[in-house]
Length: 116
Image (tube, rainbow, N blue to C red; front, side):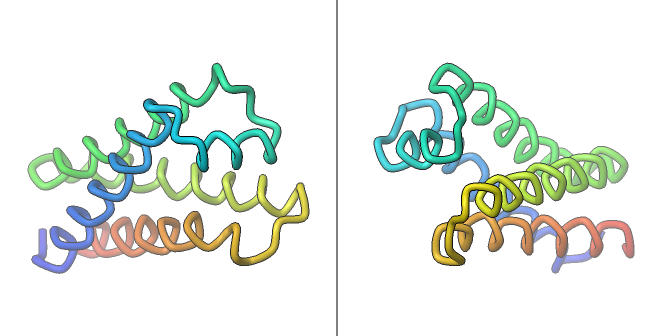
């Protein structure tokens, strides 16, 4: 595994876990976004769990490359779905930008991990 993939993976894992903390603690801004997207409040822990699992998988992927690739692909799919949800409700680019940033990180991590 190359250094670039490790650094991008670490950044991706930190972003995912911090985002998940907002889901778990019911951060008001995150809850408002969830309401706007039509996500029931009782599902926010599930979303936080998915992001946490992805972040942990990316870290373990430093030692088990197949798990890192799988976690990266799952995070790519998660954040593509997040962007689609924002698009579905007519959000502007500003509201979709955080998801797009993490999608870019997840894509970069996945591609660099596959290439190494």
